[in-house]
Length: 397
Image (tube, rainbow, N blue to C red; front, side, top):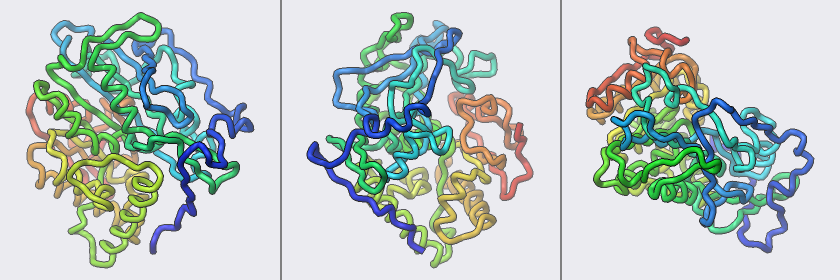
């Protein structure tokens, strides 16, 4: 069946009978995030002002930086696109701001709740097993609720919730604002950390998880082209799709309808999303096609055949959970065959993302962790470890 419509009315311009979400939802003030600084954290906040990029509530974009601590990696960079799902209807965005479904809340719609000093695990951990220990690092804060893709030039009014609200959907502009700042070299707001210009990087890993991975899938090639003298590679976590050739005719029809509808209501109508140059219309929601045919920059992919978020998307094609899991596992194998230069790691641990989690080092498929896999990618070693549904070869700890 065709997905249930959002019943969404989108209006542009200052004459809309709607109020910016931060001003419209004072009833949620007592539920707004209270994010404390981490005095031991190695990541320091950078606020980027003077641009045409806004978080959902109009606040300026931010990121957290850590300068290289190893002279051998003074010209090496990791830039990470934060995860955080999305919203596109008034009711969903109101619930998101008010924290109805933790961990999604106003922290992911504003820079007001981003700490001055923080820490992250996984890829950002200062441990011997981390191949990226000592590199320059930037953690790009997700605050646009549009998978880092929105290009709207004005606030968007959403009138299907209570109250009517308006938001900025400018994820694409935020990407450009943050990358422009990094290109020149930045100093943290507290003056404690300064990074070298990103344009001088020797190696650059662009990484993304969940919504961050979705956004990165559409940005990776253009960002790689931005740094022609840099070795640029990508890392996707919690991103996978189904090879449409594996569907039956009826399943393919339903999957196509779902992709077309979501593209029209999210990417086109609400966000005016920037998409990968090679895709078009509903095909831009076809993740497998993006990964197997459109993206040309080398990358490594980690996903989970039992990932509940991925399964939800596949279920839109009218299949049951067993069939959905089998399709994801088979698609991962097809992807490895279609893109023999890239690494594919497909676990079966019911985990959506692990890049900034301790599981980055401990969750394994065929004895291989995500940390191992990314280390090997930079050694030009390709790995393919894919667990079959429902999974027997994964270590989930």
